[in-house]
Every structure is written in C-alpha cells, then in structure tokens.
Length: 238
Ligand code: FES
Image (cartoon, rainbow, N blue to C red; front, side):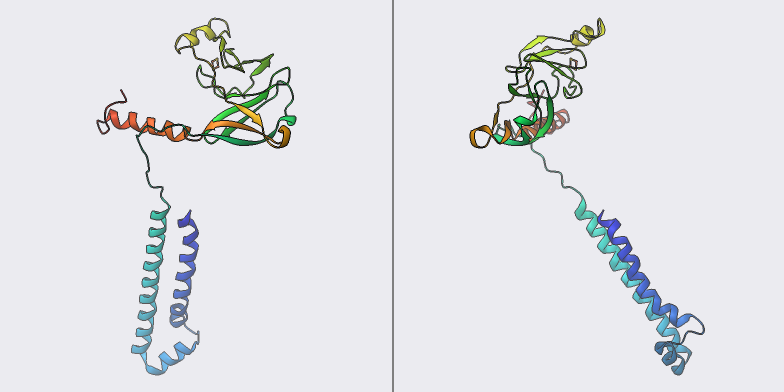
C-alpha cells in the first residue's frame, strides 16, 4: 500500500529532475541555462547535461530507498505466544436493544473474537448462545429455527436448549446422511453466554459476558501444536 502511494511521488520526482536535462538537450529550446552553456562553449554544455543526469540518478536512488524502507515497515511482525492464556471476562455492549428483537428472531455478532448469536425465545425471553454449531461449526445464523426455547441447527437438525446449551437431538436430518455425519464427531452441548439489558431499568443495549482473551488463547493453542510438531516447544500439546 505504502509502495503504491510512493511510486507516483517517485515518478514526479524523476520528472522534475529530467525536465531541466530535456530543455538543455532539446534543439531550439532557449533557457537561461542553455544560453549560458552555449555562450561558454560545447564543453560546458556537455557538463551541464552530465550534471542533470547525475542528479536524476541520485534522486531515483533516494526514492527507491524510501519505497524499500516503507514496504519493510508495512510488514506485520510475527508476535505469538504458546503460554496458557487465562480467561478475562467482561460485559461487552452489542449495539442492539432487546426491544429491536422479535420473538424467535436471531442476530449474529462477533464480540471480542467470540462468535455469538443473540435472540429471543417464542415467549420473548432474551438469550445468547454460540453461533457455531458444535457438530461441524456451521453458523446457526444461516437459517436456524427457534422453537419454544430450543434452537435447531439448519444443516443436520441438531437441537439445543438456549437457556442451558443442553443437547436435545444430534444430527437427525436429512435421513441416513445426517445421522452418519453425526457419528464422526463427539456429541457436545451448545456454548451459552450470559446476557443482560444494560442502561437504566434495562432500557439500554443488550450486553454479553464474554472472554476477551478467547482469541489469544485459541491462537496460543494453535502455535503450541504447530511448534510441538516440529519439536520446538515443550512437547505438551500431543
Ligand atoms: S452442523 Fe449443525 S447439526 Fe451438523
């Protein structure tokens, strides 16, 4: 990006440097430099041209060095840890008021690296669950149904209680294929998050209690596995 911005600037710099040289060498163009050079003879004229070319080359070198150094600065430094990252819970505002949600309506959000789904049961009670189905990670927001206080995954029909995350049915559809896909993954409950309505007497935005270190912990685990596989960490991943 920085390189793209600097290239036109380098071009303009070169143009500014080449212009005097062009005026000196173009026949019929009478500049003060040209008139002076002509008056002093051919040797001075040649010296002037050489000086212009040398200035241009130097300017081009400087511009190229600036472009190289800027592109080096633009690269993201690799920063990672393989340490155990402890949870850090915090109430995060969602930007959504509970009154904006209708019963059975769902809204997907990413809060401090956590994929969550806030919604209302058929009776209008507010809830917040993980958006990714524990089967193979399909986003529930892509067509999940809320029936009573149960949410049903759109892909294989797994269903979970929204208040506790408890598994009710595991991979029931489509017939034969759904249950077969269910065999390859251990049954799990759905993640749930505490939520509340902020503001005076609950008139404000919906807030969700999330682990703000969740992304960092996930990445640390990833790096630990990667480095342990190469024999470069403490070997406790496997
Ligand atoms: S992805 Fe949700 S049940 Fe298979």
